[in-house]
Image (cartoon, rainbow, N blue to C red; front, side):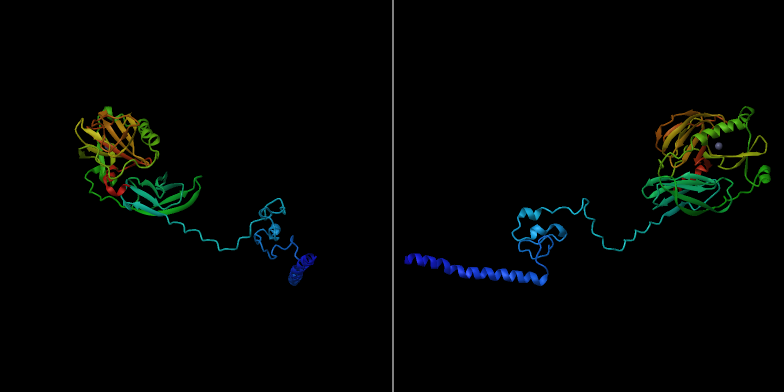
Length: 383
Ligand SMILES: [Zn+2]
């Protein structure tokens, strides 16, 4: 039995310290909760001491189970019931100063040359313009500019042979894709008269201008009727003066025939002793019958045929609203839609139409207006 008593004693004795420790721990835990507030309610105290893992701070309403000592990993990962069917609104962004928009690039307007003579042209370039379309208005005409790349718009303006001396203005309109005006740029160019020559004839003295007195045989003079002039102008201006796209050429043009300069652009004309009734719309180069004629710059043929006054000829579209015409040909060597490089043979020298002899009547047309072809041999005009 001693053995039995010892067993009972041994059982009782080790239980004492254990029971004391348990009671102390329970009293201590209750006292700590009482300092900070009401007894810990696991449903409302997400910030209560979490011996296992603290709740996620962004979801205080659903962290309770994970905060409970002994909470299962599954309970920690599963959120509680949603407080509302819609997700909580995003946190209010802190007020930050709005970044300033980048400064709008300054559009640059280039006019070259800035000084021209009556009947001449100028290149208009706009760089750095944030626009979907652009146009230029000068001397009573408006024409679209063409986009060379994202940063450059290009076009041409011209003045008539009787343009006034002095400062002229042009306006570039920058538009959005719907054609609404976004901004305008205004530029100036100067028209300077050609050096005047002493008038050598009575007609020029009377007109105060150089006048070319032309004598035509009866069968040719009868071609100079208003009806025939209208046919010629319709083909030259109405049908073939659109802006088809970017320039097809680059750099100065070449002379279209190996010959002698003759009747200049813009000179006043009288016929068979009559009054001055017109001015010369092109530049004449005298050459031998049958000499080759070349296109002065790259482009596409838009007309190859015969007109009553201009005779046989070719019109080439160079893009950017610029065209060239070659007339009085004996023979045409190209057809419409042919794409040509500068110097391509397009026909042979002749004297068809209202002509006094073998020569090339060379025309350049800018946005539907005849201009002086010789200026297009100069570098300053070209992109
Ligand atoms: Zn001519």
